[in-house]
Length: 197
Image (cartoon, rainbow, N blue to C red; front, side, top):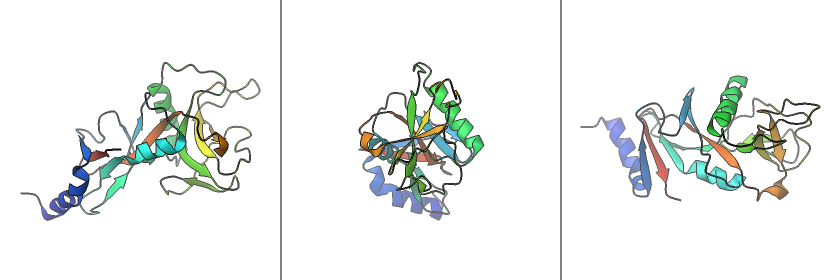
């Protein structure tokens, strides 16, 4: 028999289970996800989409939190909060896309930041604090309502340090499809779902 707190989570999940695929993890994260800290990360090299569709794709993944919280959290485009997390995200990007050509500014992947009317108005799609930044030279370049990207191109001869740096994308180019990286909290129960979309 289940303890009361685990049973309440199962009952809470019943409506979701009717339209979701189970992703039960043997380790800290489901297959095709990589653990770092208390989160799981995923870059699917076959999923090319706009920033908004990428965010919706990431939100289709659900994590059942520890029994004490009785909560379910959704995934989001990756948010980055430290130099160490930035290095991990960049390395996962490179390792997940070994066959992509590294030319000038591409490839780039979408990440979860959005800029408001000014460059100082940075927010993450998961609602976490904008407490770390890793902009490329000259970025952000003043584009209002811009969307977030990380680049792995060699940059330009004046500053080859673009690898892993952030750049913004004009909202007018929101139709452009790119790879993206998702992030979700690890489940204390090792129980995850993927909603049908």
